Amino acid sequence: MKAKPKWWTSDEWSTPPSLVASLESEFGHFDLDPACRPETAKAAKFYDRDVDGLTQPWTGKVFLNPPYSKPAPWLQKAIDETSTGRASLVVALLPASTDTEWFHKLVKDHAEIRFIKGRVRFHGWLGTPIGTPRQGNLFAIY
Image (cartoon, rainbow, N blue to C red; front, side, top):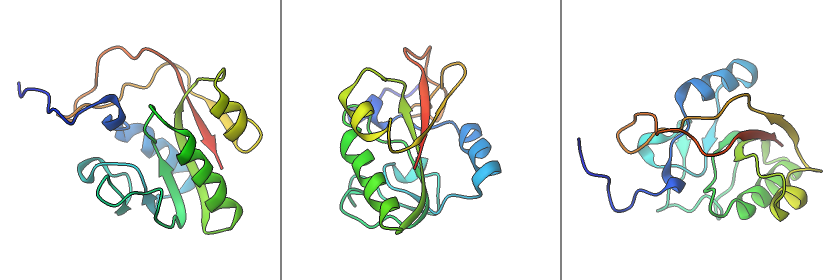
């Protein structure tokens, strides 16, 4: 087994492809993944750490799995991009942290909220599921 890379943190965890496929069956293919690594992108167009997704335009249908250590700027960007019409849809996969300021300020009154039954098993640097998740998740649909 390869050792975990030094750059790998939970902010780099990848969304399981089956979860994205279930969303695509409802919304169609995503046009943009603005917060990913090239090898974990969920859309043909993507932004990674080298091309900061917060400073780039978001267009079309966007899948967003933001860094959980600081989701607020990404959620504000989702609101901004959908309210101007540049992005037609943003589906954000978030921790179900309904007690946080960012949830009340940027999710609760701005997005459709869908709680996910069970816990998402994100994928690690080897592309395999990570152990038992610590918390639940939800989708915020802007």
